[in-house]
Image 1 (cartoon, rainbow, N blue to C red):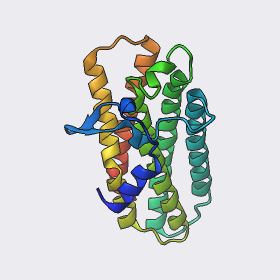
Image 2: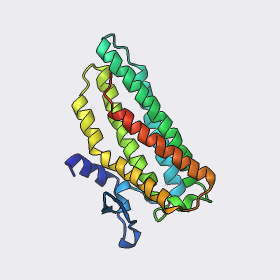
Image 3: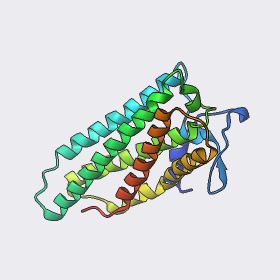
Image 4: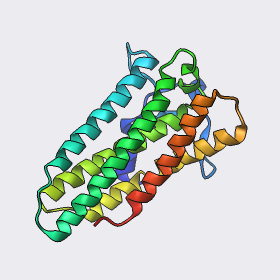
Length: 211
């Protein structure tokens, strides 16, 4: 794990007792659920934490969209890159809305326990938020650099590579949960299925060249 990824994990860590560890893994390697910063902070309920987490993501994407609106380059290559970035930000906003649909279940009394620190859906939802949050920050910085006509494509790609393991974790958790055949309300199952499809599609879009 490189230094940036290590820092990323530490920033999202919340100390847990041994009994609070959720067994999750990627490629057969077990990780504690604490790496995704799942637990609410002091004097904050789980429902409040879920709501504030999604609101923070939505606010960050809104600011990213505002930055993209300020693009005014007349350079053909820069304009093409800006257009590509706008499209990916649009896809990010769609992913955020789909994630919000799932988060709404996490905030409901009826389904919240499934997403709580000991819930079976906790690693999936938290890892998606962690990955999307980091990608949003990377896109934000790229947008600012494009406005200055000084994009650092290498640094951008490195940041995406640094958190690719979090995306794999989310995809793995969804597949594992689906294989268990756990009974879920149709609305929740459909929301999770939509999230999985859009999550994979957005990752593919990010991996394609800009411009």
